Length: 116
Image 1 (cartoon, rainbow, N blue to C red):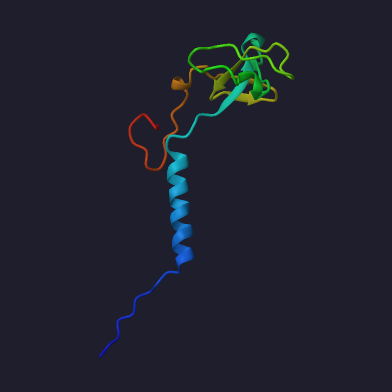
Image 2 (image 1 turned 60 degrees about the vertical axis):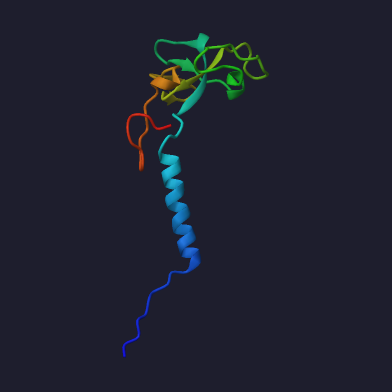
């Protein structure tokens, strides 16, 4: 009589593999677009917008364009989030202030044009 043997995976292998797959699915679908806090009043035709400390954008909204509370290190900056821009040093250009228009980053498990 032949004995049937089944191969059993170690529980740590199963857990680690499952966690990796879950992390990939969660982070790739519906992730936030890349954003930088910029001073809206600093636009330069060659460089774009000057990137400022994120504390200048704490009070601003991507849809209302509200001005942020002035804080140390921003010295009067009209900070707002600027999405999917090309960054060169302390300057950002070719992006958008509208989070909804930022590039949709689809990935594993994503369907349709909306990721989240």
